[in-house]
Image 1 (cartoon, rainbow, N blue to C red):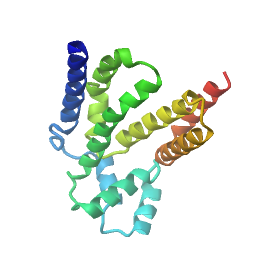
Image 2: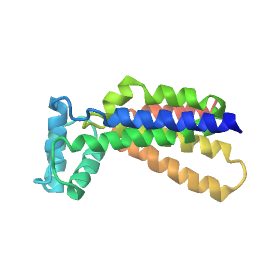
Image 3: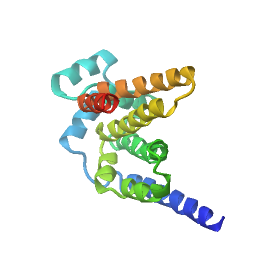
Image 4: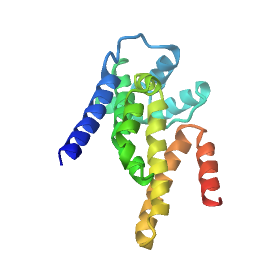
Length: 195
């Protein structure tokens, strides 16, 4: 009992420190060129149509991150440094859903090790501190993989598989609208199915 309590305490402590790292010194550095473009596209001064047209002229990635950021600025005030909080929130939420993926992969016995790797990964931390699409792409990728594995782990109910398949399609579509790396995901899923 003490071992399980200590194991869960370590688990939550690692996640808590990982979340702190994503928000620590969030606005320490100045904005770089791509972040300035992102904030310009998502500016509330533009209508949704104008933002979409500006985005199509200067961006290579799709519009979904700008959509989330524009919606975020409509709820909160428009501030160039506040835009980074959306990415940090998605980066932190990624840490909270990684245990779902590990459960589907049946890696619960080394869960703390994987949470440690994801929490203290310098690339994931720095990408969570940029007003760009990387953290949201990582978030939807984890959800997509999780629900893809859930489809194959649920052997019993057809309705359950149907609802899980809908979640999978939703999250994979989000990746599709976020970046073109979704082709790699679809290819990987196809290889897994037809192996």
